[in-house]
Length: 124
Image 1 (cartoon, rainbow, N blue to C red):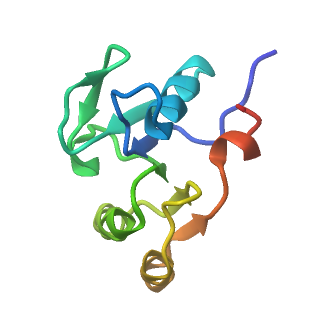
Image 2: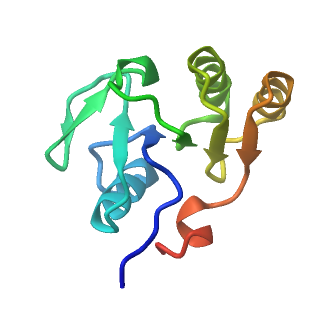
């Protein structure tokens, strides 16, 4: 069965090299499910043979969805980056949301979803 993907490029912010962390699991399982995905971690490097970008603006093509797997205080700066880059949809994984991040997103006209992407999209 061929899956029709609703996003051309997804960026996962908070990808980790530690296989026990959700940033790693989400990135790994999106890759396995053939989603078009890029990983972001301020330290850069490689995970699962894929380059990690140190910020969203390093990615060659602008993602149309950002998934946050970072602490709530970091999510605020991710929302700021999305606003600067014109990214209009951010999926906040459980634990990464904060009232401040949600308020900023609303102010900037960025759509936010606060649920587990992996469960909602049937990957997990």
